[in-house]
Length: 140
Ligand code: ZN
Image (cartoon, rainbow, N blue to C red; front, side, top):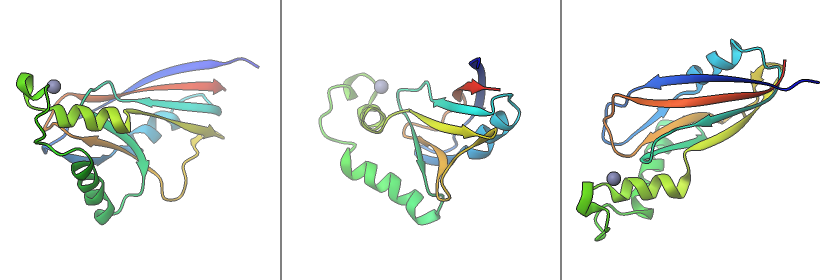
C-alpha cells in the first residue's frame, strides 16, 4: 500500500455581500480527474471571512443558512474588530462554523450523502479572488 497526495485549487468569485455558492461540481471535477481511488479529500478555504459547509441545495434552506448566521452573530454588536474594517461579524461566523471539511473518496468518487453538496458561504463579499485548496490523500 502506498499513500499518494494530490493538490488542486478551485478558483471562484462571489458576486454578493452574502452568498451561498455550490462548488460541488468544481470539486468533483478535480476528484474525477485524479488518480486517488480510496481515501479522502480535504477541502480548505483559505479565507477568514468564508465558511465551508456540507448540506442541502434547496432555495429555502440556502436563505435559512444566511438567516441563521445573522441571528446567531448580529452585525452591529459593538464588536472591537469593527473599528479596524467593520466586518467582525463575518470573521466570527467563519470562526464558529469553520472553513474546511473532509469528504471520503470511494472508488474514485466523492462519497457524499444524497442531500449533501459542498457550499462556500460568502460573508464579506463580493470578492473576485476566492479559492479552495484540495488535498486528495489515499491509494491509487
Ligand atoms: Zn476584518
